[in-house]
Length: 362
Image 1: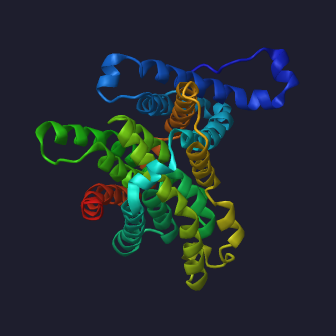
Image 2 (image 1 turned 30 degrees about the vertical axis):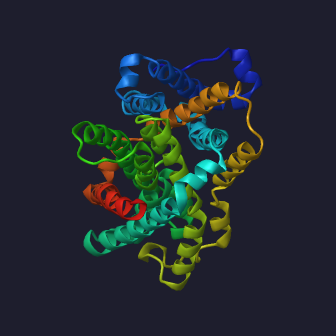
């Protein structure tokens, strides 16, 4: 991969431009390519939306030549991965109303809570008792699998006093298996519908996706691979999980303050409440606020196509950035056990989630 260059005068006059522009240009270029490819009829008819194609392009580039020049592109890529995703989810609020949220019902929130508690508890039991992994590593993978992927890992890291390697491993595992679920679950739905195995509507399946798939952007992509109804339901259920992050972190901090910390962090201070509040998913609150605005003041119909396009592009850019930072080499270096734990949790999310969804949603 050749480094992207800018006019020397612009670079010299603006150090921020020199630092962030290469990553921005790379990600936005790949996102634009994904948006164009997503309009190809054959790809669209096979469930390959712009968001799905965006993460595929990101993973391909990220695991080939990108690694050699990552230092140049990383600042811009990281900004997009963090802020564009949140901006895209916030803007998504203008696609929904509280009538949509009410339609999801209390069952969706109950399903979210059951999946969060059961997945994290299973992670702690399997990871510490059976696989004998470090507790901080186990809790990071458990949080990422049970709540919202990489964002939950990063938010949980200061609470459990995890080191950089543990964070990198946890992020890699949950992104990889979340990506697998993003492709697998819509394919299973289409196969099930075609063969008449299970009579599940797209709305119910969307709620299942939102309660089980790891990353927010992956949930959007998986839902869109089915239809708009599934995507809307998936986002509603997923945002319910995301909004549970703050109470989860507070409960975890309280628990750890009463228990001994992992051996390598035994001499460290106890979790700081400031870390918990700094991890508050404010973008989820802003999402709910925009849903409220859209419910009280109808957005003009002529604005909707533009809102959808801008929002999809923001999410596509976030997916590209996520793919660029998904390095299979990090998982390989970590060994088999973290990968095995993430795989077992992914299996529980699919099988256990299907069982609980059938029980709770009827």
